Length: 469
Image (cartoon, rainbow, N blue to C red; front, side):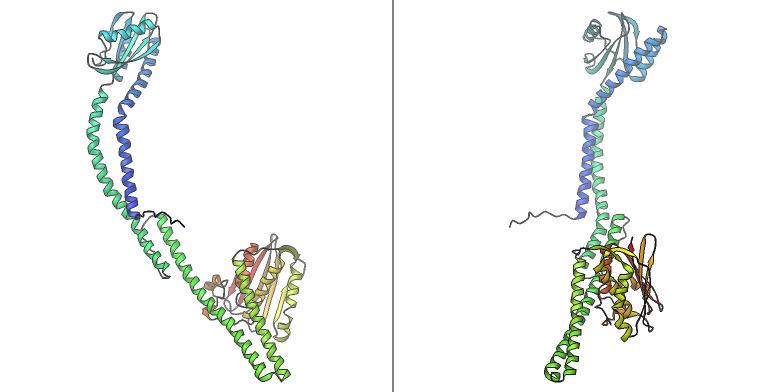
């Protein structure tokens, strides 16, 4: 078997720090590319776009203004506001007009005249030229415009100013880069430390929890919502693990007790039959009946543990059928007649008319049996158990009530746990195995039935569940 490639590990502090530094480098590289290297290209593209707009503006001005003086004034304004040189020509003769903007923008050498002549001879309406001004050796944009039959306009703009700007930006950016990198190192260090510190504290507490210290407390002073939620979740998990561990110990002790007691009695009575009462028929039968009763109790306990294990593994499937709930409960109550005749228990059923429901009949029988057994174990001195069926529009509620001492409110969420006993005082039940309520909970949840408990100290407890119509 090939071993997995070992991945190099880093602390969260160094990870955050390195990511922030890399991010700062990326921002600086981006700025260098677009503010220095590509600035000239961008400037030329932008200037070309502006020149196209100026060309259209000159054409519209010529078409709208009939007065030459007004048109010349408009050209002067366009030239001054946009930093361009505008010349008018009538064929090859220069009209006595040229914008007064700086000489760097105007092209008057013979080399440039060739481009102007070329445009006049091309009969094009608009034409763009990119050339070098031989007088100042600067890159220049030249647009030719055919205004009317023999009238032409030439608009030129130099690209020289951008080179000096780039030079200034380059020298400035060297200092900006150094300052930004220094600040990034400092700021990222403190940010990473600020984020990493509470996570380190949580990790240390989690390590204590993993060693079995369920009293480990997760605290943080950070204002980061996700870390606060993580802290709350881990505190809840720690509390639940502590409860689970405590219940596990109780479960082992209680199961051991319930297994040991019948086994001890079976062995004792078997030895008694073998050694003492085997000749006395009456005593022998009494001892053998005790062995059978304890064996039945032991068998019931094992069956309940197996049933609960299957339910909690989610491997159990339900067999849904329709049946009369009233008749179903009456049949179950009749099986408790021995408690009425021998122990004077009273089972008071409050229902008469047939009520049809859909459920797994066998599993629902387990639910009702366990709830009645629980009521028998905890009812008051009057030994009364009430069974009531309430029919509503959308659901049917089954209630089983005892008249016992009731349950403290803080203990109600815990009674569904396996072998939970108030004040940790485990006693053997009159009937049942101590796993009844946990089995009830799992069966009702498999059916998706709502269930719960209502209890008042000194006035008894009502267990209920609701069957959807």
